Length: 392
Image 1: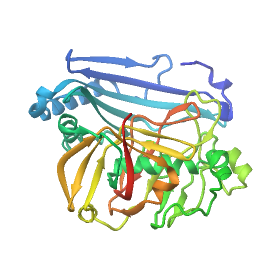
Image 2: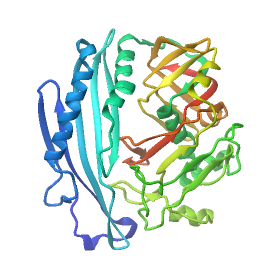
Image 3: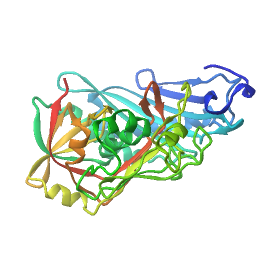
Image 4: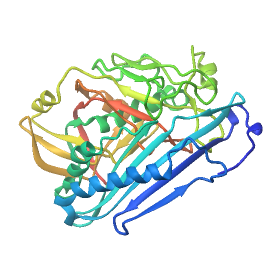
């Protein structure tokens, strides 16, 4: 970490300091390890090691009890809890980000032919509000089971896809969010003939980016250029409505406002970046969506994704086969949903009536500025038949 005196930091070129205390527990050694940033630079608003170790012990005990039924399948696991806070000087004034408490659970499961990693992550902002028991039973245990019994996809297949909210929020992030960052819009969307007013989908989809929503990892009142945060409706009833701007693109596009100029600790300049990006809820229950599918796949969880120009890729953790309007116990793994952004968004058919937000530990990467804190949100999204591909 570079150290500079506060007086040398100016405007958007200011250095961004990150302070942290981390504890992690490894099941093999049964030991708790401590890590921290340079205490001479550390900001004392962080949670204490004693507090972190108390939470870590509680998490390890809950996980240990819940894993008893699948103990023989677990080779190893590690739980990491980090309390961190960032400091940025802009407008010659210090600005502290909200305190974050990140939780990362990493398990290795003995599958049919190989060791399979299972990862769960979440971030609490300011206060500990993690419902770990719910996460274990709704997310972690089902993914462990899928790792044990699931079959890898062997060939490309075209089927209706029902995306769970976590995966659906990533689709929105990659396809609409990145395309709506004004520098990306100018670099590759506009030159290919896609401009504001383009119809992403015939479904009346509404997509927002709103850093003013409180309590999320990417919430803020002021961006890294000192501009007030602003709520932006990116897509309105399926039509491309607005962009995310920093000061530079605001001037280039003669836009009414900025407020999305952000950068990472080592970033040389601010870029137009997403914050709390989400698709608004629809009108269908999850049960109704499943019942309307004769043969398809319910895609659950995410192993990450990315986008480059007009193309995207997202990788579900696993999928459950749907037959005759019912979820089966057939599990498929190791497949990607990828292709053209506009093609996949035109396949959006229905959205469920619940909205969930996610605050991942790992952030967003762009132009060499990686791991920027972001928040994603979405209901379930049903796609008309779209091709999925085996992981190569």
